[in-house]
Image 1 (cartoon, rainbow, N blue to C red):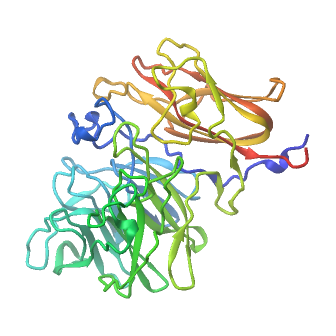
Image 2 (image 1 turned 135 degrees about the vertical axis):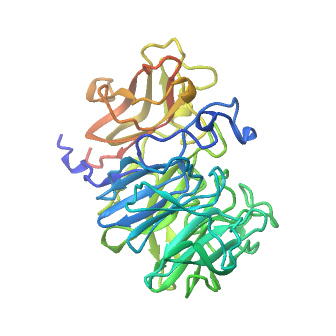
Image 3 (image 1 turned 90 degrees about the horizontal axis):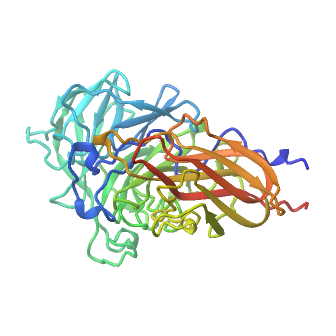
Length: 484
């Protein structure tokens, strides 16, 4: 049977993004030698990996993702992302929520004072550094800007430079113009641009927005579109599935921002891609606008997160919306109409460790997982799709246990084999990744289209002693063939 019409295009991706070398979490004990926010761990205090709060820069034909945790990724096609290190002068330690902007002929970098050594602005001659410190930003009177959480640097078309940040002692989002020639010197005093609006229900704190007088407005970002300034913010708490992106519009970089959107720009509360807040907009191929965002995981720590992206659509009134996706998408063709075929179908495995049952690998949930027994030397996981479908792609979100960066137990590439079986359990296809060299925590693969009912994942156990690998989510994508 000719299944060639089901081949996926080359420019396909799937959320969360399959980025290499997810780093040790900022709050993991392996990052700085001790665990902060111990009360945020879901169970024992242990190492985990995460990325969040993406800021994206477009520069001379290349896009750069700068997420929390001091890593970077670049791409020339907006689909395939290459892992990069950022160089900093000795003694500089970036915090959460980095921001990078090109101002004149140099690049400026900053990040939240939380976990950094101090609030500071850095400069470099290239997007990846090396970055050197220009000092601590001040207002026009020379007073240090003590509140410097989730900063965002924005260079306008007229060459003027602005900084946005949220407060900890005082709620709300603030903005200030900076001297473009000397970016650590503010011009005037910070201006409060927006604060919590309890009438905007999605801003209220909690997984059901159940706190009418409580909120956490943060994660600010600025973007100019069709002459209008869009001030983006995140709410209602990054640990919640209802975490979302909101936006206000104004006619100048410092407002007033009087047009506040009453619906989230990005929000998704169910499935593998939830908690879609704190990110940014960037202009993509063909002048399209894209929302990059944080994805909630919450398996080991309440702030364990991933990264996703989707296209922004503007209505005739200027309102912006993003349809959050969790199935394969094409950069040129959009949604490919593929269905998740494996969610909550019958799953079996070679073994299960504790309460980490095989059903948890196909439940479309981010904080459950299947883990084989430590003694299982040939672990496998299989899902019964209940009938034959044309399978075209799969995504594995791996689950790791035993990471210990201080002891040298670090992530390694997952090696595995995918096998496909028909209704009669006859082998009808195979994809062998036992020689895989890409270290992917989120592993998305398009496969040669195959008609199959059963899909089996055979794992090669990790080589590092003490490291164990299971499956957080195993999702099989494809179509029902109407012609059969």
